[in-house]
Length: 75
Image 1 (cartoon, rainbow, N blue to C red):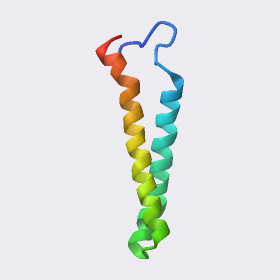
Image 2 (cartoon, rainbow, N blue to C red; image 1 turned 90 degrees about the horizontal axis):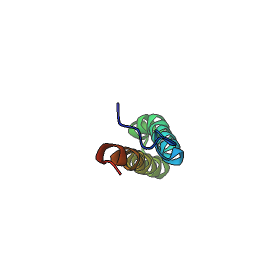
Image 3 (cartoon, helix red, strand yellow; image 1 turned 135 degrees about the horizontal axis):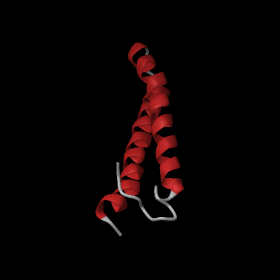
Image 4 (cartoon, helix red, strand yellow; image 1 turned 120 degrees about the vertical axis):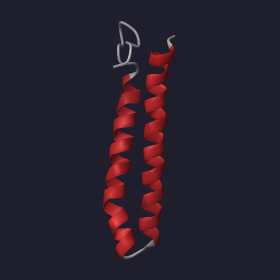
């Protein structure tokens, strides 16, 4: 779908891909667990976990952009 990063690393730095994967999945898992609980019985912990979830999802979007942008723009 996107051009290769380099011949040696066609997908770019692996740490960016794994960072995106873990941040997105952990953020979604926290949201899946705490959003329904927060709507049933709001707590400060639930509110904090939803904020952490949003930050992790934002970080995932940022790391995805960082890994894809050089492939789109070129070196």
